[in-house]
Structures are given as C-alpha cells and as structure tokens.
Length: 214
Image (cartoon, rainbow, N blue to C red; front, top):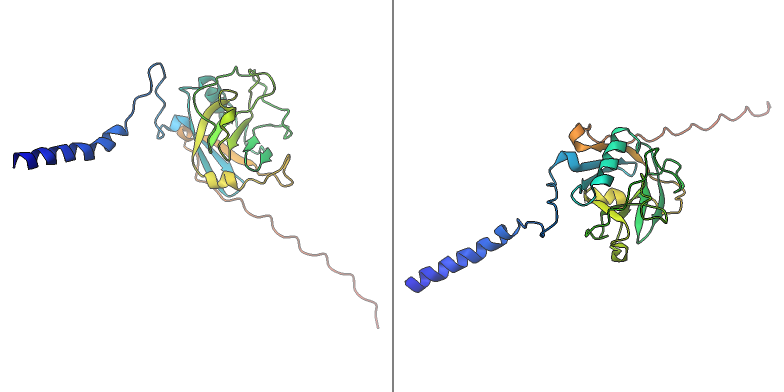
C-alpha cells in the first residue's frame, strides 16, 4: 500500500507539472512582457479585407517604436493607408502616407531596437531605409517565417487574432487593388465593433437612345 501511495503521489506531481510550467519568467536581464489581455498594448487594425486584426505590442523589447505606434494611431495617422508592398511568401508592408514606400510621419525617426523576437509568421516589425536608425511609421507583417531578418529589424509585436485578414491582403509592389487600414485603434481607447465596408452600389447602365422611328 505504501508503494501504491508513493506512486500515486509521484503521478499526481507529474500531471501537475505542465500547468505550473506554463508560467515561465523571462530570462535574466529581460523585461517582463505585458499580458496579452493588456488593452494598452493591443493594436487593432480594421482592414478592408473583411475583418479586425489584433496585434500584441511589446514595449518590453521595443518601447520607443511601440510608443510611436500608439502616438500615430491616436492621431488617426494610419486610417486609410494602404499596404503598398506585399510579397507572396514573405510579408505585407504598410504605414506610408505616400503609398510608395518613401513616406513617413512628421515625427523624428526612431533608433533601432533590435531584440530577440524572431521574424516568424505574424510577427510585426518596423520597416526602415538603409540606415538602421531610420524607422518612422512604416511596418510589415510576416506572412511566413524569415529568420534571416532577425537582429536586422525591430520586431515590436505579433498578430494574435485575425491573421486570415492579413493573408487576404492583395499581393504586388504595389498591388493593383491594394488593401488598406480602414481604422486603427489602441484597445484601451474602447474602439467600436468592426463594421464591414459596404460595397459600392453598382452603376446602372446608361439608357440607350431611342431607335429610329418606323
């Protein structure tokens, strides 16, 4: 009986281990990330592709660029901007008011914040020019993993809901009919529910002129 009791106690502890292991503190020297329920660090993009995308922001690794995202979002900078560069098997890039990859906000560029987050599917990173310190307003969302980009761009978030609407963004450089950010919000600002975009009414064909009289 003593052996059976000892075996059951050991089995119970092994069963309980996975649940306890789900709470893993960050490695030494790394800041603790915000919870995925922290609305101040959830970036919401309502896309013209049919739904809402929720991005978990990571101020623990990229505080300057996360702050830039929040500032521009609350200024409604991203509302209406298109995804101007979308490459199949790579990423979708947006956040340029010029729509051609050369624009940005009126705010100063943000210095690099390269970190340990990988460029996996759904990762969101700051786009930049040749200079490592030239990130401003543009961002890109990874469609597939591309780990060779690690430590070369600032990863500042990750899609945690609505990735299917990112996948639906038309491809092209630029796309013929680009998708756009209809509205952008920070979840803490209590955004309204997603509203589907109404299709433009079909134009009625012009009336034909009367035929010749008989």
